[in-house]
Image (cartoon, rainbow, N blue to C red):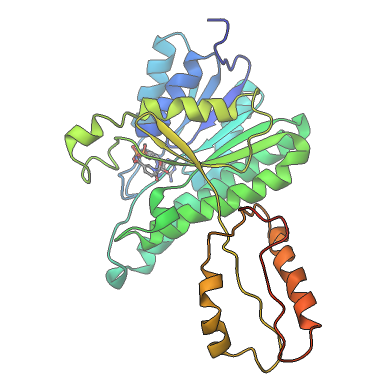
Length: 320
Ligand code: NAI
């Protein structure tokens, strides 16, 4: 179709593309004309072992369908090797999908350093190494698209996933900064919290639920975000799966202002607690500067005579 979003002459790197969501991305981008680097370490979903088979099978499938793909078997911790595979084989990189991941679920009480470190090496350090290796290419060509992969566990927390939650919410902050630093160079970065049937979710969700969560149904949102036609949506957080997709954002409550003298006591804070939690007057901050409005109001308050509390009605740039 004429309206089809295509990726001809572009190179897409998908990490962890040997199965699950990564495989679905790889097959899709190849079918839309992209050169695809199919990266996968090929280990277990707990991060043990490795094998070239996972990536090879997907590359073969793409080639059999007439697409262009090469395999890379490095761990994402070795990001430069993965990006090199793109440059050596296709001469460029346009899109990076940081998707590789593992789980080391265990109650926080029993969590070992190894559980914490391995999760952070793959998710946090791995996404960093891949993006940093791609970055000079993106800057030079003034074009780049990045997807990082968070999780509902990171956004909201989840039993047995303190390590994974920390790493996954880390992807949000990481993405926000890449979006800000990349803007000048037409580098767009977004982060997704997907839900899909894969070996990762096979043991924790019933089959009838998994049937309605095909990885293929996550792909179109990602494709839309990394397509060249998306020049404005950056730094976005999207929850998606099973055909549903919604953007998330931060919400800051009305807040309280207190005079910074000896009246600033825990008791004074307690008396203002309703304002601290009052979301009926709120704003949707997208940068650190958004807190400055409240601080400016605070400065005005500081110059008021002692014992007097000016009425704090709300915020600069109120949203009601
Ligand atoms: P999956 O286990 O099917 O796929 C992950 C792939 O990454 C595997 O093929 C694995 O071999 C590969 N991989 C693992 N460690 C690697 C490393 N160090 N270097 C290179 N490749 C490595 O899992 P799934 O479900 O497709 O997950 C994809 C991403 O989505 C992960 O980041 C996961 O945390 C995230 N996610 C998935 C959810 C779901 O419902 N499936 C929910 C929330 C997040």
